[in-house]
Length: 282
Image (cartoon, rainbow, N blue to C red; front, side, top):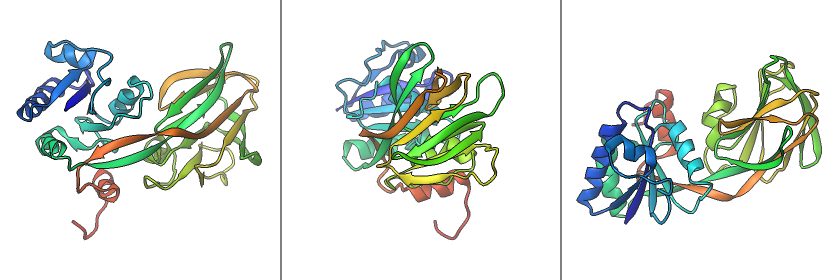
């Protein structure tokens, strides 16, 4: 078995956690390949191709590191991934570095549980640079730029006019992203596998504009009504200017990402722990 490892070099605990992970893997004769930054942390060689020809990719950090890892993999969703949390909230991560010895045991015994996550494909036109296609695990966002003015966006679902949003921005979120920016903007929590997207305005001018859940078979078309460029980002990366009067289209991507979780880990257990919910269940 071979494992690729990506690590967030800004985390103070990353070097010690990385060494511990390598030590645990060595006990089971598991080979590893480090990305460049991870290699620099512990003085070993690394490569940008850390994810190629491996059976699993480990992401050492938090949710942001998980997103960075997946994007560094260039959209290659054929490789399962697991997050080792040395960050803060860690909705996407599988376990903490302290739990990794148990995770490694489950890994070599083929006892991990695979969770399939849907992804979003987005077509947008960048100001002065033509059309691009992006994908997102969490969300895509259209938002106001440097002017501070509200953005003006017309939304259609499968060609059927939905509404005209005037807001600080608009989020199109997957179920995975429902615990990220969309949650902070007042959106609902959506369980994995629900087969939906969330259309969520950010601070809408019309108070009756609320988050809307639509089937993930829908094609969502967003028409930029502003004469000045507004900003676009997918998973918080590569903030770009959207060409005035252009159209942004979001749909379900063909590829799905596989997360390898602990055998007894569930989405609802994670919600209770991460959000500090109370209740009688253990």
